[in-house]
Image 1 (cartoon, helix red, strand yellow):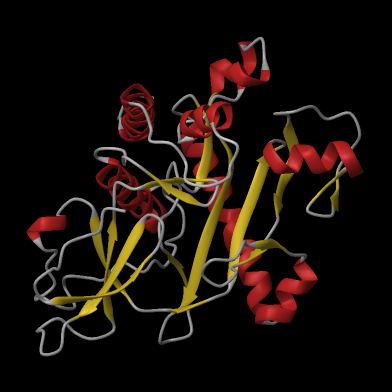
Image 2: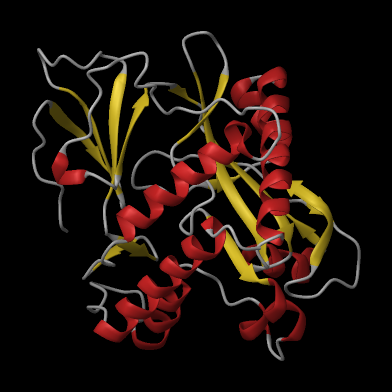
Length: 305
């Protein structure tokens, strides 16, 4: 696995499959309570980090997250959604090291909640499998007669429990969410997630895209305010489709071709039995995946509708 090199003024504290987390080094001028989140070019699938990474992926994901944080801070005309980005006005010493410029964010430390806030607006993936078997998605009953890729009557909130490192997240009910964080906080998570999904969907539809589903993470700041954290509405946390292809596609694969690492998953499924070490990604798969990440960023951030 490629790791982020030591960074002056920062101490590495954690690495996930894609992101690396740093805290200010002892004696640093940067306030404690700040963290540096670095998005790497690593790509994971089926709980494995693959080789090689996707060139430029960390920068693309960070750029898209920052764009969405700006939209949700009122750039779309809606109410500002609090987020974890640290304000340079509050701390003039804040500076992202040159070695990770473009793929890092300085953020405020939060008390993170153990709930992954998933919102689904379309029936697909594991939800489609459950619907075929039981007529539900994460235990929520849905109308009969829906097909793979169909729009749901209304978006649904389907939370998951954020399992400890090395374990799988687990879908949970709203009642279980209440048991984890309390009734008031659970309602805030649900309402904020559905609001953000609705606002984001309107933005992407104007760009000829569909936001099929997404997941958010929230924490609590020092004033007790629910705060949007981590990445937001990126290709790694969300399923985007092309709206025209969704209407005209002759097959589910054509209708629901996503702007993410699905190319990697599909290739791996055809050549690997998910046992042992996964094979190295061919250059063609790497470039096609990088192109999808770039295309999504360009389509979303372009001023042209």
